[in-house]
Image (tube, rainbow, N blue to C red):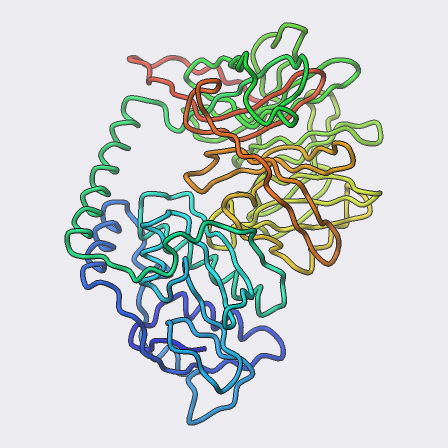
Amino acid sequence: MRLDVETVRLWHIQLLERLSHRPGLQILVEPALGRPVPPGIGRLLRLEQALHGLSGTGLLSPVPRARLDAFEQQGAATSDLILDLCGGSDDTRGRVWRLLYDGAPGEAGLLNAILRTGSPVAEIREGEAVVAAGRLGTERQGVLLATCEDALARTITLIEGAIAGATLRLPEWDRAGSGETPRLSNPDLAWIAARSLSWRAIRRLHRVLYQAPHWRVGWRRVVGPDLLDLRRHPEEGWRDLPDDRLRFYADPFPIVRNGQLTLFVEEYPHATGKGIISAVAFGPDGPLGVPEPVLELPYHLSYPFVFEQDGEVWMVPESCAAGTIDLFRATRFPGGWVKDRTLVWGVTASDATLHEVAGRWWLFATVKDGGSYSDALHLWSAPDFGGPFTPHAGNPVLIDSASARPAGRMVERAGVLYRPVQDCRASYGAALGLARVTRLDDQGFDQSVETVLTAGPKWPGRRLHTLNSAGGFEFIDGSGRARRPLWPRRSLVTSG
């Protein structure tokens, strides 16, 4: 591993330690000269750390060179592979993998890529061949230090996957401007600092005036083609599932049971800051009342993936705070939910989504692993929806902030399997993609995003997040805006 040993970072140490635990690998560090970052960048990152209350011991923080002692190369050594992390020239001693961000090497390349696009593409190249690639994400857009550390965490994932032989590919992406030499002058850095200060002030003001975050659910009666066929918002637009501004509803999942359509949603009371699962029945003209709580646990719940199988109704809610993916069963539908079993342990997984293909059940979810919640797709499979689930040998099968995270049930149409996905390049849940699954087996996974839908005149707001349908109705969700009440109002939340 070729490193600039004068600027050793915590992420270098974590990468070395994780690779050293892989059987059959011997890791040595070769000192090299890296490309320096602009001199003012350290002051900018310290300013952001103070403004946003960020840790001073993150992945970008410097560590003593002595931390490399166990790995430093003594004298000449023959290697099977050189992993160049600092942008040195190609070497003739063997195979060389170079780490690039939007075509440029090193920390300066990463910082420039973040400032240029906000969602950089990391590549490992051997010569001109791409060994592995991923589009790196963050939920902390607008904060350079936080975005950089999320990107470095996922860089570790990318390198580990490449060395393990995982097939990590991206479809063609816009390379315009890639490989540019970073030019962050003092005026540039001053502008970035001013933007960070103003962003912080605007965010605080928004939270004073509005409930934030605030989402809303849209619904419509489907007459004619649905969104998968239209590939655009319907002309009639969407109707909102109303809320009282003290809570929001998100992640709509409908199900028809005994001829009755019931919509499950995440309900998020602003007073508690913790999501619960609620449900409301639908009639021919829309909701019959307001959502009522049906499942509440000590930790946050969302994304109530609900389905019927073997005469029972089941749910896999997102419970990433618990570090598990759990299966629940309804004993008194739409309520009476009891935990049936744990499907996957020891993961911070988002938006777990099940789908059966030819008698085999597949479980899709994004896994945080120190970085973003939304850019690393993992798969598991099992002979039954209740498990036991086996992780895919190529996990993560995809690193892409534009199409990794699930956004609703998968749908088969004319023999083609479609996957709603979240496009989080601009921000979390900013857009909705419709991806065609072109491969799904024990050896690999591939998909092609065919359509990206955004908010607009037919769905006002800034985000579009989830898509589901059942019983002749279609549901989406996205960001909403709710002014804070001028005086306190009593919460209507009841215990589940």
